[in-house]
Length: 155
Ligand SMILES: [Fe+2]
Image: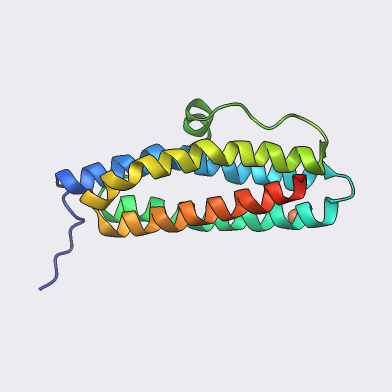
């Protein structure tokens, strides 16, 4: 008969979940920053960046959801409340209009620390939970793809 209880978080599951938790606030902040840029971007590259930032926000939400739900499936609740996100993340995008080039650079600069944190977390995830490791790799691959696409607008 199947168990009806959630996983008891053992050491590996706790390690994977806490590693995911450390990554989550930066990802949530990226979705907010992407929408901020989506709404306020101006300039000759408006159409491209308005679309690219919207796709970026949607993709980051998907990756974030996959990681968060993996932590919960491992038996640990997650914390992505606004206050937690604000406390854990760095400076916000500038208020008001953004030039097309400025929006691309500002967003790329915010991708960097999140991608770096995921990169440095891969070994921990690989040894603690293969599924979380896979989700983190998908996220890192996507972040670096969007970093390239955003910065291609600035050359
Ligand atoms: Fe929109």
